[in-house]
Length: 388
Image 1: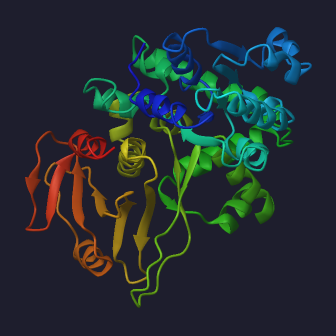
Image 2 (image 1 turned 180 degrees about the vertical axis):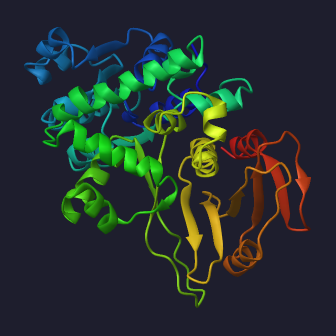
C-alpha cells in the first residue's frame, strides 16, 4: 500500500463539490485509493460496475440511490453505464435540497474523454475532474531509477525483480489490446494497435507526424488520428501541446507525443533492465518523458503544460503555467553536468519566464547562471508540491 499524495487533493474536492470524477488507466490504483478514502468516510457505499451483481443493483438507479442519500457512493468504471449520469444529476440536486452539498459521489473511470462527454452536460457545475497518475518519485522513497525502469503502475514497480516487472507489463499491454480496448467499442485489430503503440515508443518525445505513421502502418491519416485519440483517451499517451505566444517567431504548432508510463515504453521496446535502457537510443527521450510526467503529476491543480519550439531551433522542453500565473521554463538533461543552450535562454527571456530550471539526474541543486538553477527531479517536485 503506497501513500498517494493525490488523496489529499481528492478529499479536498469531495469537501467542496457534490461529485468528484477520478480518472486514470486501469491498474494505476484508483480502486485502492477510493477504498482508502471510504475508510475515512463513515458508511460509504462502493459499487464496481464491472461486477454483474453490483451493476444489477442499479437496474433502477434512482430508486436504489434514494435508499442511500446519506452515504458517499463510490462508482467504479462508471463509464460503463452512461445513462447513469442523468440520474446522478437528479440525485445531487435532491441531496442539495435536503441540505447535503458535498461528499455525495466519487466516480472512477478508465477513459477520460468518454467520461467527460457523458458527464459534461448532465453534471455541469456539480463535478470536479481529477486524474490519478502512476506512482511518482516522491511516493516511492527515492527509488528513482527503479521507477524509471519499471514505470509507475504499482504492481509493475513493486515486483521482486525486473523480470517479474517485465512480465506484468507485457501482460498489461496484451490485456489492454485484446480485452479492454474492444470493450470500448473500438474495432481495431490488436496487432495493428500494438504496432502503432510500438511506433510511438520508437518516436518518444517526437512531433506527431500522422502522415508518416499512416504510411508506415499502411492505413489512412484519419485512422492514425483515431488511434492517437484512443490511446490519449485511455491516458496511455500524452499529446503535449505547443506553446503559442506572440513573440514574432515562426513556431512549431504540432504536438509532441509521449508514452506516458516509462515502464510501458520500455516494455514495448523490449527493455527490461536499467542497463537495457541506457544502451538504447530512446534513453534520453525516455528520461525526458519520465521527468515531464512526474512534474505534471506534482504541479498544483489547474496548472497548464506545454513545450515551446521555434523553427529556428529555440526550444524549451516543458513550460508550466501555474495557477498563480507563474511561468516556469524547464529543460531536461540526462547529463550529470548539464548546460543550457542559447536557444533555451533566449526563449525563456522572450516569453517572460518567471523561473528557469534544468532537471538533471543527480542529487544536488546548483546554479548554472544568475537566472537558471540545475535541480534534481525530486527537488523540483518538492518545490511544486509546496505550492499546492
